[in-house]
Length: 297
Image (cartoon, rainbow, N blue to C red; front, side, top):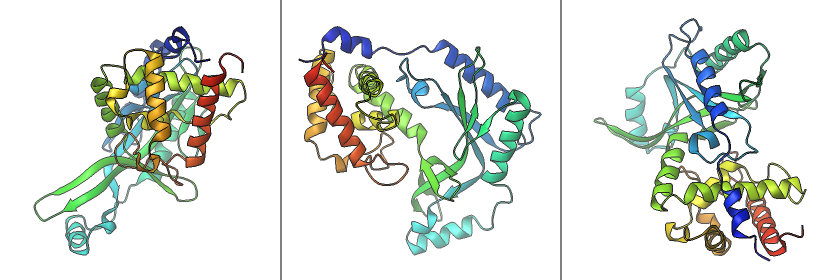
């Protein structure tokens, strides 16, 4: 039996946003304080993740904030053709004396001074909520340039972020492109895209709560990316029709061709910025099981 339309509509609803907005405002004001050690550096702050993209659901808790160091940048210029890389080296000689490790330490020291107990993880700095604020993850990162071309006159690149895991693995992502592309998809689908993302996320949560799939198998970021690849005409009319049309397309498509919503990384793969094909398939199998066996799970 298919999941009924009223349940699907309920799952499409957005979670609470007021406390999340207030959390962002509070933490952002601390990060921008002129008394911090890093204030003299060039940086910018933005909200990212589900709350930034209006795809948050009631189970979402953490507010995700990026603070990006722009005083220096990381890059993939060595992958350019040799003649273009030589031009790049002439344009950007030398090595920066202040980089991401120093920046992350100063951000962590400042947040500890202002909020007390924090947890510095290998990716982000966790600030526990206090009743007025939600839990918050602050990601210190640096600007990253993903180069397409460098000439004497100009250069073309995708502007992103990067950070490093404790083992030295560099993680590169493009949150602005992700957000912009999701907004464009939402507009192209007559405002069906983001409610559909929330529907798929809440179905995932329902499956996790019943121990049908483990937590972490289908991160929100990848669900957004998966649905971003579905043609816009598959969304609309009703939530039942939208689920059937989008799910049918995804199941039958060559998902190895899917991109993340940033339009740059492949959606599926074996790196930290890709969704493993096995986890994606397990999630899709569980969705089909949920749909075919509702409400007897």
